[in-house]
Picture 1 (cartoon, each protein chain N blue to C red):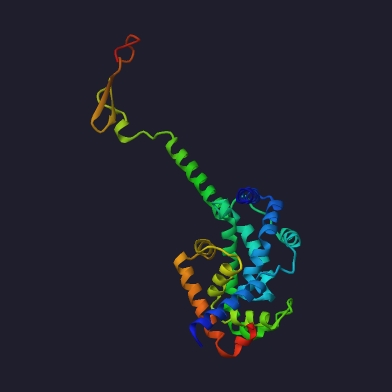
Picture 2 (cartoon, rainbow over the protein chains, first blue to last red):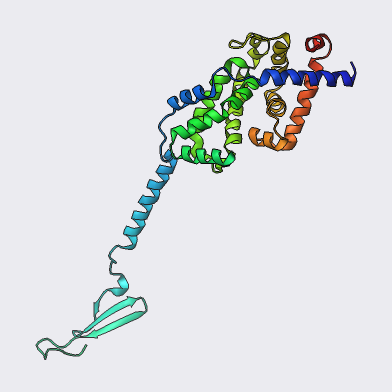
Length: 113
Length: 174
């Protein structure tokens, strides 16, 4: 069989295919639509993993906010150290001392600080 | 038309069932025709229906609403491909007696016999070329392959059809 015959056969096949494959479905589009719509499950607003991610992000946000907003604990550097009777020493950090000189007990009120 | 489809897709994404029904109505015939060429008459409509239910569930993942036609075609094609592979052993001659369709001519009968001997992807490419008249890039978008791959599948499909029609079956087309 020549290549031309073969090509002719393929063309004829495609003509039959066009007729066979182009037939309308037995179920009319309107009926198909109502049947499909009747079977549709409820649409959820978001997919489960998206919801899970949103909840996780919210929890992380709450945890971070709570951590940052916590009342600060006095650090070692800020603890008071009483040097002599009338001097109180605070450390703002490891290299920054602050001294408060207290008036003597029983002395005049409003002593030097 | 594509704007109208995009509007329907947006509405359907928001949960509008009626809009989705309109999309089904618009695409039903085309989807069933494709499924028929890949899996045969018997399963085509059930398969298209299943694929449309999948499309409803996955609609949220479709970012470009105007691509709905090729997107939903791809869903039908993938399910058809899976079905065809599962039924590969039964598909050839057994399916000639497709329920739901009585062949009008001997030619009808042999169309499916020849088609069923092609690889499912080749059937789909031939179908979308010959019946739907799509371009290579449209077919590629619908099947999830490149346009050059479409050309290769079509060339192989035609070669295979030519070989199958050699000799004794040529009288069928006369």
